[in-house]
Length: 198
Picture 1 (cartoon, rainbow, N blue to C red):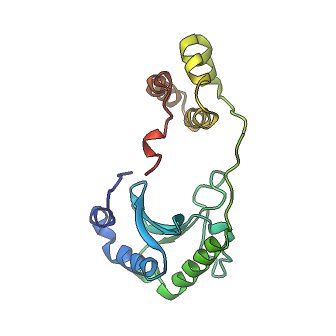
Picture 2 (cartoon, rainbow, N blue to C red):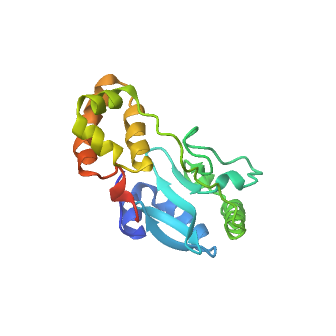
């Protein structure tokens, strides 16, 4: 996914969804949230905390709510786009501008803002055991220097690398990913370090 520096850049890059994105953006901006860019996408915050974001894909655009699991969702619009991976985040998808009901979306936004102000959020679990997939473990066992470098990483970085290998479906993909991450592990950097503090 392309990482944009400004909201306008994001909008221009997704011009095929111009009408839909402008309508969604207006609803989000009409709230008390502050518009910013994080991870290259428009993100809306309250007191520096992420509340909502905009996304554009091939077949739809979406608004996601970072703590959407707390929303009552009385119109049954929200989905968990990454079942089993995200606990709090929920997404509302739109296929065209006719799918967008600004008044209904504003109700969801208002509730999300109220939830954030009330401090309702799912805390990220810390100290989760690192489960190293067999392919990565074999590489660490075969290369003592790599193993030492991996052991020196924080548990969070170790989990990122383990998940990156484990998420690959094909053996060839796992091996190509292993080759890609070797120099990163040896350098002591995390897989997603370049995205931190965006």
